[in-house]
Amino acid sequence: MNLRLFLNVISLAVVMTTGILAGVGTAISLQTAAAQIIDNSTATSLGNPFFVEKGRIIGQRVLNVSPVQLEFTFVANATINGNINATNTGTTVSTVQPNGVFHTKGQGFIMTQDGEVATYTNQVIGNLTKEGNVLSRGAGFWNTPSTGELAFLNDMMSVFKLEVDKEGNLSAVEWEWR
Image (cartoon, rainbow, N blue to C red; front, side, top):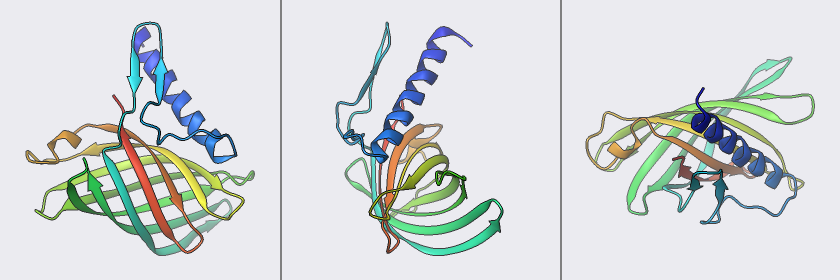
């Protein structure tokens, strides 16, 4: 592994760790537009999010009890780059660890009002807040055959934060990882 790639991987780990710490009380928010990771030769800024969504969990089921594994299906209305409206439909499988932290794998697709489609997979880590909400941080991996408005998503990696309240309402904000 070359040094630049190694430093970028470490930078991503720092961002993910920062997000996890934010969920347990540290007053850090990845929503700030100036979040930066700096190494000796480059500075990476998350900038403004490209993806903002609000939605709801529409289904859930228990897949396993030892370890506890839960499947959730959701649908959300998303805004991409501030002006593209889309619907996000996805499914996640969460494995609850003995310490209460959960690891989640997800997949889904977005569709614009014009019928363009992009797909994603993601890896997530999260926990419950004192209020009973789920707070998660993750990385997404995007693909699309689109040559239109969603073409920029092809082979993109992103980082995001997601919150789900006790009633199953969710909100997420996502940034391109460059």
